[in-house]
Image (tube, rainbow, N blue to C red):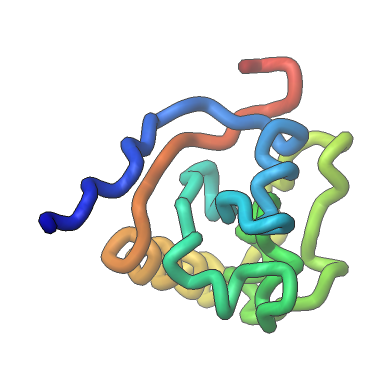
Length: 120
């Protein structure tokens, strides 16, 4: 019997509040954002799922953490606050973030963009 096609992924606009539920709990989808790009990282559930070493980034904007190579929860902006504009990042940190975007773009599906709460 032929394999079924994977579910269709629609490109959509997310806010921090609408992205948050996509944290992989209860077997659900796992999304995260880097510099406004939302990735479906469900294929990396072992890393980004609830028990994964980077699970705190699931359903969140991971830009600052990726830039600073820090996976601490302190790198996350609360979902009810404005997006982190990353204005204080150093050039090498911006390059780190771009490297992660390249890596994720080659490995995971881009499924949306992240905008301010109230903008979608």
